[in-house]
Image: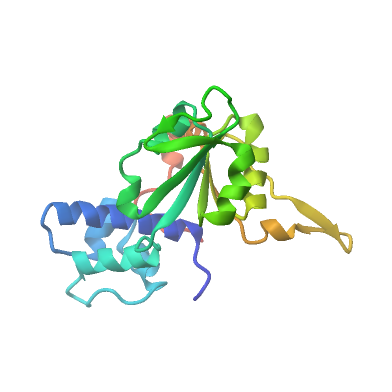
Length: 232
């Protein structure tokens, strides 16, 4: 499979959301032009993004909504269950735990962790908050695919390292800091340490989004036009 730009994966998620909306409206067929208009890209970009993963439509006929939706679910790995732990059970962590849509996409919360004695032992959505010291032993006997970080910024790096040390390979970071993978110096060069080599970190930074929004409101002419091509 050719190298696939991160932006293309993000657009697949958008296309899937659009297909779900079309299905809810009992619309059975769509086209690259229709998807493009709804996603704010070009029809060429839609076809290019989908072509990374195969051929899903018929020239002149477009796409069957249900089939393309099923294929994108498969491509994105949403046809299997993903076990998730949440680190941090403050307001944000509890909001994430109580978000109703996660299970629709096979994301299953299996444990909650914190260091605050006041919340250890509490029940949130049927899960008992455990101490971070118990994270490694939990992962040893339970499959954990992802860890969500909902901790204060000054604790995010340590929490991420705890997840990696426990063997968790996917981290969704809600803290407004950049997680730094551990590196080692080998032959005069810095390389990722072995435990970080296959770890994927995704950052969800609300403040960063607000800052970008503020800039583009003040400078709308600098925002990419909806029909512009990606320079990937």
